[in-house]
Length: 236
Image (cartoon, rainbow, N blue to C red):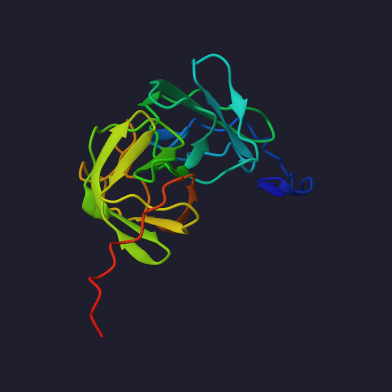
């Protein structure tokens, strides 16, 4: 630096370099929550990083206690794990950099929902050869199901389903004719539409059971169909 006045010119000191220390970041804003299965997705706007790179976000379910995302996540949206379906939550976020945490964001509310289709656990044909019970991994919602959505075969031959009754976590099919002991029995279920609707087998919150094909059935039948009456003899 050079200074000049009426008496002359003086050479000043060398240039001074100033380093501005980083500070804690600004809080995220514009939070939008989307309900997931046992979790929630929170989209947000990231703001000033405080002069140091953002390293993570923290969340709170009570506005007091905060938990760092693990693994760390610095991209919107972030996932809040470990929530209970059908329970309402109020969620806050904080931004984290090397200095510390931001102030808390405004809150956003969300209620996670069960989005997992019920799955088949077992299929068993009873001793009478007429009752085929499908057991699912959770409670079902309806009391009846369309027989047309089921296809049963016995040693490859089609077996007609007369009724389909939903009870608890089971669907009980009644066959038009008994299947005999030792036959190989397979069952197929076809979800009638692509979306969730009451024409399908559903769980208690409305998720359609998934289509399955040629599922093996445990054949406990003791039925033996007697041979048919032979034709009348022909005189020779």
